[in-house]
Image 1 (cartoon, chains in turn cyan, brown):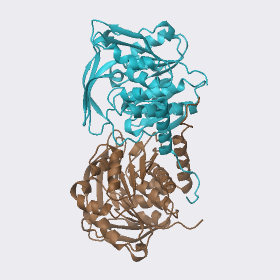
Image 2 (tube, rainbow over the protein chains, first blue to last red; image 1 turned 90 degrees about the vertical axis):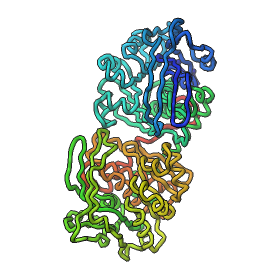
Image 3 (cartoon, rainbow over the protein chains, first blue to last red; image 1 turned 120 degrees about the horizontal axis):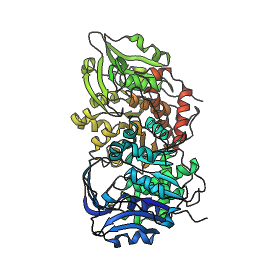
Image 4 (cartoon, chains in turn purple, brown; image 1 turned 180 degrees about the vertical axis):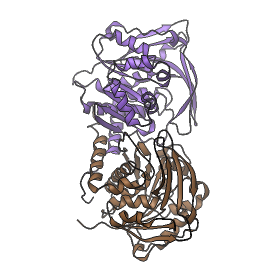
Amino acid sequence: MPKPDPVLVVGTVAYDTVKTPFQDTERALGGSALYFSASASLFTDVHLVSVVGGDFDLNELNPLQERGVNLDGLHVEDDGQTFHWSGEYHYDMNTRTTHATDLNVLETFQPHVPEPAQATPLAFLANIDPTLQTLVLDQLTNQPLVAADTMNYWIENTPSELKNTLTRVDTLIINDEEARELANTPNLVEAMHRIQALGPDVITVKKGEHGSILMHQDEWFTAPAFLHADVTDPTGAGDAFAGGFMGTLASTDTITHQALRKATVYGTAAASIVIEDFGPRALLDATRDDLEQRAKDLARYAKFPPVGKPTPT
Amino acid sequence: MPKPDPVLVVGTVAYDTVKTPFQDTERALGGSALYFSASASLFTDVHLVSVVGGDFDLNELNPLQERGVNLDGLHVEDDGQTFHWSGEYHYDMNTRTTHATDLNVLETFQPHVPEPAQATPLAFLANIDPTLQTLVLDQLTNQPLVAADTMNYWIENTPSELKNTLTRVDTLIINDEEARELANTPNLVEAMHRIQALGPDVITVKKGEHGSILMHQDEWFTAPAFLHADVTDPTGAGDAFAGGFMGTLASTDTITHQALRKATVYGTAAASIVIEDFGPRALLDATRDDLEQRAKDLARYAKFPPVGKPTPT
């Protein structure tokens, strides 16, 4: 088996304060690039590009480094404070309210991709300012497969910059509310058609407890979420999904439709693990075998009986 | 191929006034028993038990009769008005607000199952007062397979009567909000466990555009919804689902897990057709072949790639 390609991620490393109807946590390790790395490093080596403040305890990243996450692209702004997000999940654990977004060192963040990472064959542009996303794209030398995420803030405030990013990426990984808002239609399938017309060949819509939908050219794949009776903290599920998705593609020679379905399944598996604890802990404790077991469970849920002709069951 | 068993349904026949963000309709044919019958009659003969007022145009039911729906159990209350529901769908077409529920002849409805229908091997108790549901159960002579639906009104106002019904049915077909409310937990999987503990062996939770989840003993099946880029009116989708579900089981000798998965798929197929037009029109125009094609489309969406061991894709 050939060694999988490394993956580049550009996004945030954060301290999160999270409240759920059941438990709370303060200053948990978080951020899109961190969750992505904790997930993708179960599959391959990762180059992380981000920024933290002088308050950040770099020792907290040791488990990531031990699993092959290269931190040469992590800039430490000694005089600044680390990005801090605070939010609260509602009764259904599927929707949330943001209480505070203290950008801190993110306000002046100019991502710089270290030279060895510039030739990476796969890159994930996590949810950051689309202007910074294109700044990263300008630094990549090897025509990589690029996936991006975004959020309502950029859809509402920097629509033309976001549309520029979309013309330059292969895959958009986005949640269902954002997809509807970006495409300005309540119908998710119509929204995905419209987003594809903006540029990306592949659209993956994450729907939390309802699973995800993959659109690749004119083919569709629906994946259920893992059937958890208990969720501790949904934070990071989307980035863990992206990490499993890109990590799976890192072992693929050509991006076939089948490979994208597989990437969706392992993205789902990784997301199902991270929500079992606060921060990236559950993912950092997980093994590749845990992911394989999750993927098998998901396949069992989703398996159709023979259909298509009126025979007795 | 042996002739499938007939199915009994007890529920409402209504005139509906429906507003969506895109189109409106007034006095469209509706009601749970009507939608169920339009769907189940694609699979087998149906006995319908319900009530309408003197204002109801019985000719509107001719297409159902032609498709094998027996109306001997439809009571016409000459001095009364037919049940009327009025509601409005929100921007996402997945949630709605009820504007009016004019019970009219339903207020004094006492369902009477005609003698030939009392021995039916399959019965669906649509969303009506749980006291009436048990009144129907008392009239059935042949220990049929019974599925029931309910709604938030009965969960909130007649909880003990509803729990009594649940001890006497095999299957509960319910939507996700109702499941969470009935089980008093935000987590849907936990809710289904709790509902199973109340009696039914099989729980099917309908999630609109997000598909459905089947729990049968300790096995789970997830079915996606059909990927519609355009929905005209979601009214009746749940009852059309139940009709396809029970209609499929009507051809089954023993209720295996595989048969329940198949029933879920054809329920989904029937629901996907009814939402393409107001009232039951689209279902009445549909053929069994249309359902088979939908089932094949759903199977294609849901098909997993091989997973479970770390091989290159």
